[in-house]
Length: 513
Ligand code: NAP
Image (cartoon, rainbow, N blue to C red; front, side, top):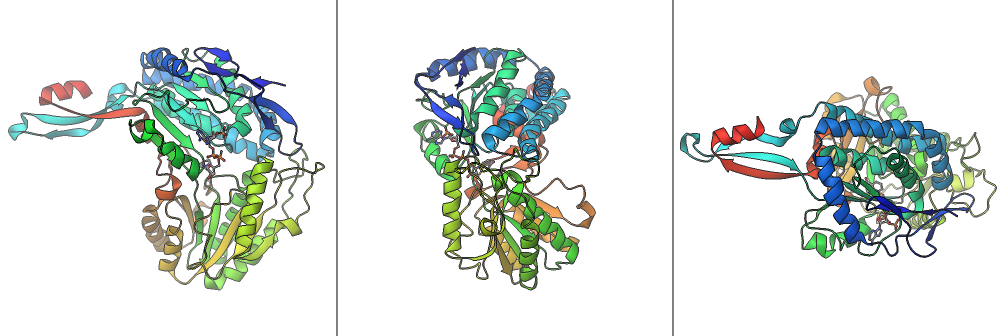
């Protein structure tokens, strides 16, 4: 049995004890174990900051961008292996594994390209100088400089590849060393990728580190000038926010958490727009078995379309093949673990108690798998005709193939229902009325990190409700964690410090020009 070693202080270190098992969610086979017991995190962090950070900062942005390109080549060369690991450890079909594996590689390539043209001075100036004295005798200029701390990534189980690389791309390009802590359940893929990159000897020693499992003192060993980027549940984010290093010492903390995202069919609701919405909802329910933070959880449609959308969804979903991702005809694979399965089934029961069932894959789809204790759950669509008073649908994220359809009276009602998510990662809107799309975008932008507008013109080229593109901001206010990631060069700001420099205009000019 392979115990996944931890790469810290420039060497592979095994955690003590037997470790926790990393399982195949379909067969139940133990694939590896993880342990972070007995590791010296303070020494590991000091090494990352001093060796990794110093060496990275000695390079230019363009040189660091070349390192990203070299990582891309290594990952591309090993792509088949990563798909194999994903199939076994995440229980995903090829297409779904691609969202994670290729999504990570694409994001790295994007930042490699952005960084290749970047100069330190171009990024440094934040705005233009403002006068602080008469005749501009004294002025202020805001500047951005790379952080000298390390970036700790505490990641969720559903994106072991993309979850690492979407963060590491921006951190490494900024000159900030990385300590990755993947979710234990799917740590194998992250570990294998990091190992391949370390073996290829691309990065300076200490620039990329990984710890698998949950080491004691993971947060205690941080310095106030370190950075933590967390992805996972709102409950875990809340407990991390309470840690004295974050609460009292000011460690910068970014959180990407749960979200009850919406898809809205416009009031014009022509058949084309309805078809686009139905296709996207089915895709979001089935890709990665609905285990995407951006997946559609709530579907809002005009009252007159409620029955038609319910019927169209049921019609499409009953044709989805669900089962062991090893079978070639399977379109939707497994959840990540039997504990997730149990959590999802419990969420389904809770929704069932206060909603109508419009499609129940548990009855209408035969799961194709030989192993009895698998983690496969087919899609379920709920409906509620009383969305204003529904006790759960706007609060509860069931992190699986589950969504709820609801009717709205008018535009204001639809937008108000979307806002009931209290801050979401994404809302998508389907309409061929450009005026409505624009109005919805501005209204939804207040409570959503991303607004995805779909009409016939973009039907064939759009990137998908749930796909996180590095060009666009990823994150959402309020309940979604309040974080911001990606969005082009914006992503680099988290890994930089902002300072207002005050001085003579000539001196300020010399700094940024
Ligand atoms: P989770 O249980 O909160 O775990 C996330 C990470 O936090 C894991 O690495 C976990 O480690 C670690 N962790 C848990 N408790 C901790 C503690 N007390 N101290 C330090 N680390 C701790 O979330 P998950 O079940 O992996 O992921 C599912 C959730 O993530 C969903 O709610 C989903 O919406 C959200 N998500 C959000 C985004 C986004 O971008 N907004 C993306 C993906 C997923 P172990 O695995 O070792 O326990």
